[in-house]
Amino acid sequence: MEPRTFLTLARVLIVTGKGGVGKTTVSAALANLAAKNGLRALIVQLATPQARLSPPDGWAPEAWQLGRLFGSTEPVAYEPSVLVSHPTGGTVSARAIRPDEALVEYLHLHGMRRLSRRLVASGAVDVVATAIPGMPDMLVLGKVKQMERIAAAGIPDTPSLIVLDAPAAGHVVSFLQSPRGLLDAAAGGPVRAQAEEVVEMLEDPQRCRVMLVTTLEETPVSETIETARLVEERAGVQLGAVLVNGRFPTLDLPERLDPEGVGELSLSAGVRPLEAEVASLSRAGLLRAARQASQTAQLARLAETLPLPRLELPFCFSSELGPRELDELTGALSSGVDSLALDVS
Image (cartoon, rainbow, N blue to C red; front, side):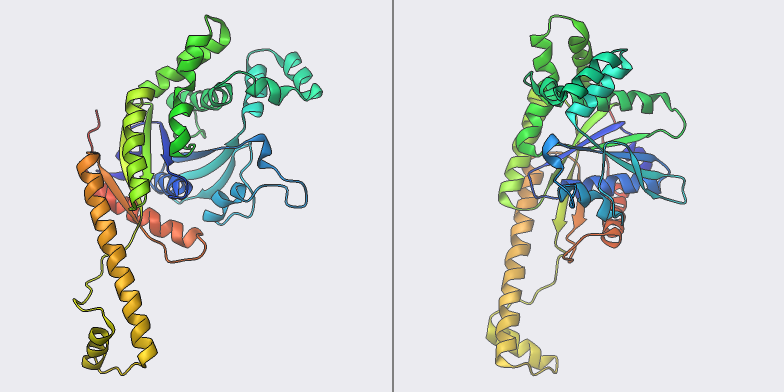
C-alpha cells in the first residue's frame, strides 16, 4: 500500500498505547511520513493547566519532547507552529490543546465573547471547563472535530491529516467514551449537539481511526490486546494498524554464548581477548539472545491474539531522539506501509 493511501484512510488518527511505549515518537513518525508524501499533518497533544511551570523553565519537560524530534528548541503551545516543511510541499505542525483554552475558543465561535471574557477575568474558566465529568475530554475532542471538518473541506493551507497524541491506554477508553456520557447527561442544548457531532466523527472510519502502539514486552502487549477490545466494544472506534515500536534487529547469534564458546569463537576469528572481555561478551550475548527470543515470542502472541495489520519500528540505539532518529523511524514506517495489506473498508 502506498503511504499516502494508508495515511488518508481517515482524517484523524488517534495514537495511544501504554505509557512509555513511545506513542509521541510514533505520532511524530506518522506525521513526518505524511509530510514527506505531500500532506499537511498536524500533531495535536493534550495539555493540562498544570503543564506550565514557573519561570525560568516556563514549561514542563514533556512540552519540549515533540519539538526536539524535529530539531525545534520551542515547546508546543496552543497556537499551531510549523515544525518542518518538506520539498514535497508537505508540512508538520503541532499544537497542544488545553480544555480551558478550547472552551474560550468555543464560546468565541458561538457568539459568547462577553461570557468568555468574564470567565477569563474571574479566573473561573478552568473551573467551568472541568466542572462536569467528561467535559475536559469533550472540549478537546470537540476541538479535534472542528479541525477535522476543516480538513474535510479542503481549505488551502489547513491540515489534511490530524494525528492526536492521545492519553495512555489506561485512560484512552474513558477519553473516547466521554461524548456518549454527555449524551446521556444532556437532554438538549449546545453540549448535547457538540457531543452528537463528536460521536459521529468517532464512529465514522473514514474520519477517525485508533492506532495502537506497543513494545514487544509482556505487559505492553497484554494492555494493547485489552485496549483494542475495549476501544471497539465500548468506544465504537475502528482500529487501524498496530505499531510495534522498539523492535531489535534480529542477529544470527552463535549457538554457544557461554565464556568458553565465546573464547573459542574469538580464537577462530584470529582475536585473543582478555578473560574479562570474554566474560563481558558472553553476558552481552546471552542478554541479547534472551531479549531477541522474548520479542519473537511476544510478537507471535500479538499476532495470534490481535488479528490486525502490524507495522514495526526499530529500536534506536541513542540516548536522545532527534531529527536523525526520526528520519530513521519514518523510513522504516514507510517501508512497512509499502508491504502492508490493509482493509480499507
